[in-house]
Length: 225
Ligand code: SF4
Ligand code: SF4
Image (cartoon, rainbow, N blue to C red; front, side):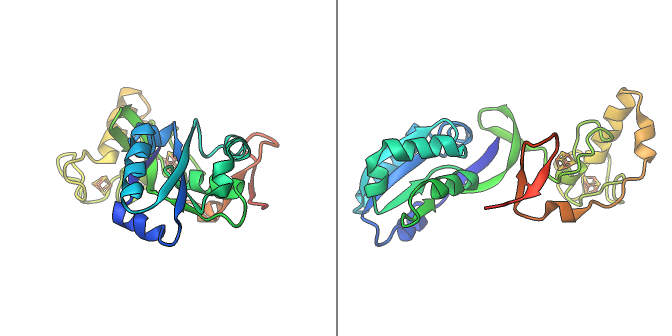
């Protein structure tokens, strides 16, 4: 799930300066779970914008705002989107981009949220970053614990010198990621993975923008539009 947080209302109002009528787009998946872009937040945003002199012309709450077919279908179906001065999107940056690509070029599409990270969900409201989307996954060797993401120093080949009683020297409340990796590999009888050398990541494959085309498994190409 993509974790988002709400921008300050004053900043949103400032970004909408000069746009009287505003249409709202929420997202019924990640943003709804984060309590940043579901129906409650759409209602809250409607009240804030109305208090600040805007006319909210309607809202859409599609299942996945980052899914272009759903966004385009909504744009075709709802004339108010086209007729509004601006569209405000309560979804992650991918959702904002998708809506911006789906409306007319002349319609400003603005974000109401900041996108933070990709998370695993313990339960609603408890999210943990588990993957930084590096494109070269090492979880086979690290027992499902990502050293890129869970170690603040990005240590790929074992712990740094600062680990103390199994705790991280940077995030002192946390267990060191490598303590956990060691413990899990040991429980799995795979401690030999600890001595395996992992070369530096090839950051060239992280050049943005990335795009996966389903032409074949793992096929990745540069954005073409
Ligand atoms: S190594 Fe970590 S950051 Fe890279 S893909 Fe695997 S989980 Fe994600
Ligand atoms: S103590 Fe462990 S988790 Fe913390 S920075 Fe060092 S290796 Fe990474």
